[in-house]
Image (cartoon, rainbow, N blue to C red; front, side, top):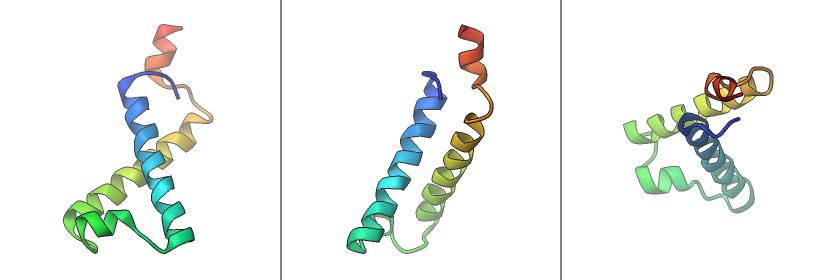
Length: 72
């Protein structure tokens, strides 16, 4: 991923998701549900954003971000 604001946001959201899963695996603590509630609308929004961010990061392994391609 490049340095454009969207790339930074995608990386941040995926990182938050990764840390949350680490806490779930090691300590059985889900920070998203502790902060936002169990399967409330905000929780579903966070999970959706993290999931979409993960997909975008996977795609970025094979395709360059258009913002970064313009800068090159």
